[in-house]
Structure formats: C-alpha cells, structure tokens
Length: 334
Image 1: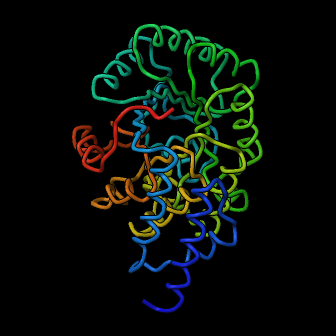
Image 2: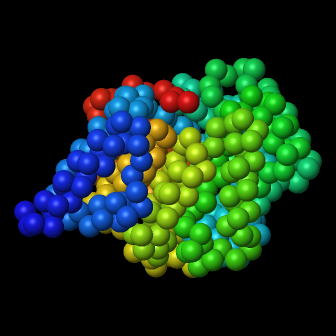
Image 3: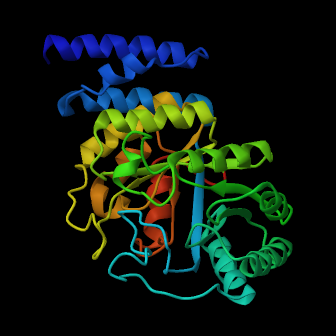
C-alpha cells in the first residue's frame, strides 16, 4: 500500500471518530476519501459499516413499490422510460383501482416488506386522480398493517395535508443528481422545485425519502454534491439507484459505474448521512450483481424488494435470504 493510501486511512480514522462522537465529515475530507483505491476500499467500507451500526443498528428497511399509474409523463428526464418524449418503452395505463393497489399491498406484507410505496408517473396527478388515490390509501391503511409511502410528483400544502391525513408517513421525491449536473438530465422543471417539495414534506412533519441515480454521466464529486445537499435537507431515507439504461431514452447507451465504484459511493453517503436510512435501489441487481451483500456491509441498511417501476427485480426469497445472512433484522426502520 502506497503512502497516499496510508494518509487516507489516517484521515478516515479521524473522520470516523468524529462522526461517532456526534460530529460531521467536512466536504474537503469527503473529496479526499474519494481517492481510496480499490485494493484498500474495504477499509473505507468497514468504517462506513461501523457508523451504520452505531446510528441505526441492524434494523433493515425493506420497501415494495407499486407503479399505480404508468407512462405518458410530459417531463423530459433523460433516464426515464415513462417519459412521453422517449420511445415509449414502458407500459402505459391509467390509475389503478383500489382493489389492485390493496392486493399489491397485501402481497408486499405477506412476502416481508416493511413499507409499501404507491408511485404514479408524471409531474402531478389530476385533481380527480389525486382524490381517487387518497381514498384508496385511506382504505389500504385500514386493512393492511404496513407502513405507507407515496411518490406522486410535486405537492402543494393542500395536497400534502390531504395525503398525510390518509396514514402515509413517508414521501419520496428524488433530487436525482447534483444541482450543477441536473440541467443535463432534465429541462422541464427546475432542481429548486424538487428541493421545495422535499422541504414541504419536512414542514408537514412527514418522513422525507430523497436520493438519486448514479451513472447518469455525473462526476464522483457531483455525487458528493448530492449527498451533502441531502444532508443539509435532513432527509430520513436515501435511495441510491444505479442507472439501468432503458431503450429509447437519451441514456440508453450510457455505461453505469463498476461495482466497486458503487460500493465506494454507498460508503461515502453513509459517512455524510450517518443517521439516515440508505437503500440500494433500482439497478442494484444489474450493476452490483454478486456485490450486493457487500453494499449492505458498506453502510446501506435498506433495499427495494419485489421489483421496480418499469423493470423487475430478483426473487424476494433470494433478497431476504441475503439480508438475513448479512446480519440484519428485516422490517421498517422508520
């Protein structure tokens, strides 16, 4: 191991000790730790895992999604198969019925998910669809003992109050990438609009689930920008998605990061966000492969199970077996 890596290990020890005693990592330190080489990466991963154990223990957040309204989105997000501006590679259907959503929630509960998230395509639902969906969520809350999440695009105060009155306790609204890089992947709404939605969720007293996608073409330092923005916002749950290029999108030929680069990102996010739930989410199967369990011991403490919005996942049984073997207690952290 060369002198530079030894210096980084000494810095890491100092940073870890400060975090464990209630302090925070500095931006300059995170940039330096980004230089860990792969042959010493497990030192960084182990430090991040100790931070995870100290602040969140072995509780594991498992969440299942339903794509309750798919396709025909008017936004131009470069990665998204549901955008009407792309080649139409995703399935298109209107808002699902109460029975369909209820059935999916019951299945999620039966296979071991701790949370159930209802997701709809588009910037925001119509008033009619929003009212229909909140009625469905109210019924769902009364019939299925599972924590409820939602991801319905942009909110205002009136909609937020109505939504959280149904029993939904967590709202997902990803920033996707850094403020600097965001215009490269979306032009139909601003980064600040996304930030304001997250702030609104926090003001309403709900749990904010907010993360992004790595592998969009951003630099490693721009990933750090995202992580520090999330820390400043005080988000509770951070899904780290890894690009799974979709046919017809502007990023269909993009090359996602290598597994060890993903592991490094997870570890650094844990050091920057020591008390948050950090989930390995969409694209983990394709991009991490056999390294998925390593990500769980590099600072992550959650996963989306049972598939994603437009792509499938691996079997729930295999996922839950991996989680248990990694030493976690499956359920809901928050």
